Length: 272
DNA sequence: AATTCCCACAACCGCCCACGA
DNA sequence: TTCGTGGGCGGTTGTGGGAAT
Image (cartoon, rainbow, N blue to C red; front, side):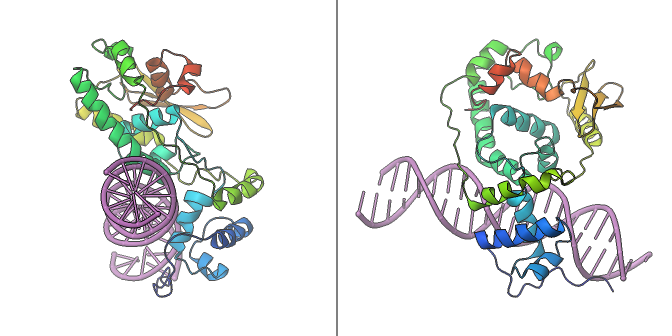
């Protein structure tokens, strides 16, 4: 009855993975594809729990993972999505396919949380409200964009640059060719974006958040994009034949930064 | 130069849900 | 229908490296 245990605890190795273990794992997945993690330790001889193998693959060895500094754009996305969705790191990561949920979670906990706290203090001292996560032009009449931008541009950015040059990246690079022919490696979970956003919107309304009466939230997906009418809760799905319209977040970020895409890329860290 | 402190991040832990026997 | 497992996810911890003293 049932299945045998995923892994017995005796003899299971813990701690950092060695390059040798990485190579064994990658070679195995290259041959058999990701999945059926229970069989991985058995078939590879790795003294690791199946969960550990899966985690190692999804967080570090999987090709297409971008490492190192988060761009201001990514930062903005994370901050906004966190405000919208809460600590749903997997959901947030689905909007940043090159980043893992673990990466985003760590970045949030080590950088953004502090920045937000510091920034809130700054705002308090200037008697400025935090911009609502889903604000638009019509809802921010009392919001001083100019003063806010000045705060954002304070030149004491302390964002750390973590250079990742371990063997795992090299292994991932080796696999890139293979993954190009594989179906959708970066999307490891099926996030129901429209349901998620509906829920988030509902929660914000309940919390007395700013509503977007005329707003249509555009949620990008792999093959289609969703337009969500926040007022009617109507969801319209579009096939992605042409480049998608600006997402709500992009719109928000562009508005915040004077609508200049180029400037966006050179944006100072939002919360310093 | 040695020691302590702090920070960033990789990895583990525990819970939950879906699914199969 | 029940129970056990696999896999997913969020929270937390351990550890190594750099900064500060």
